[in-house]
Image 1 (cartoon, rainbow over the protein chains, first blue to last red):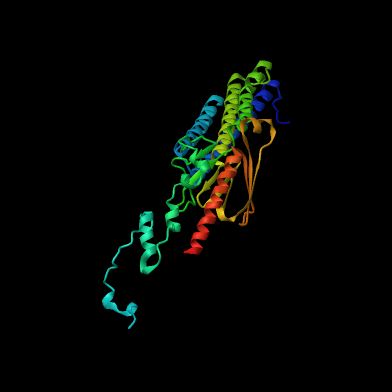
Image 2 (image 1 turned 135 degrees about the vertical axis):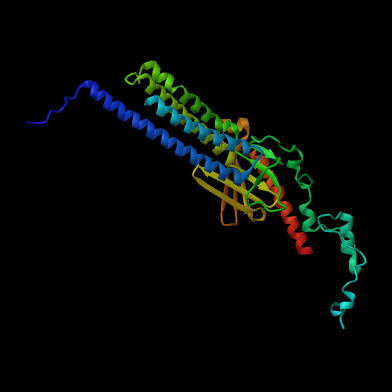
Length: 81
Length: 252
């Protein structure tokens, strides 16, 4: 007797594709968090190189950007689950 | 025994206590120059010259008010601006960025990118995805647009050209990952060229200033800075001032 193989239906293929898209979204958002972290580090280097009265605000913008990226990753994780 | 070896005279204070050069007035300097029977000379030392205000020797700076605007592309005598390798007595006299007019193209691009999801949704390009996937795709897109805006802003804000009373400094940051800072002393400047090109450059008075130096970095290019002719005039005044200092030092 041969083992029974479940037939590939359009519905199962659709689910498989959605899983792939979901993983791609997760990877994209994780990369974005890494990018936001690198941007924050670079802002730190920039504000040490050139000191201006606005440097603190720029640093806060960088922190806000990183927090937003982390928030978006968490939001995407729960929305696509 | 020569007086210099006579320790009994070591504690004796001089008849006139010379003030610190940085605190001295020109009258004090005359007294310094007149000691030991030398003739009275009206001469400024280098230390005193450092305390001189830039307005004393620069007609360009005299016409400008100190800039308190952190976003100014042409900030004369900028308030609270410094850089990491700044010397103790070094003053930042002029801070330059690319003219704001040159950044309009990035604003237009950002606005265009912000409307891309609207366009996509209107033709139903993402309609094969469930609604929650479409929503997250839009969130991701707007995050990328935001990162683009942030990168453009940081590149504009921190890519600066600084002119101090001693040096010119070119600070370059490319694509958030590459940093290059070049320094050259004012007295190493050999040739300065200002170029204004294009209709926008002529209308809004911005262009490039190319400075050739005798230092390790042979050329500085201030790209698309406002009022290039004023920058050149100011650099020429600084050069004349440095030359004057050099002659004073030799005479001393």
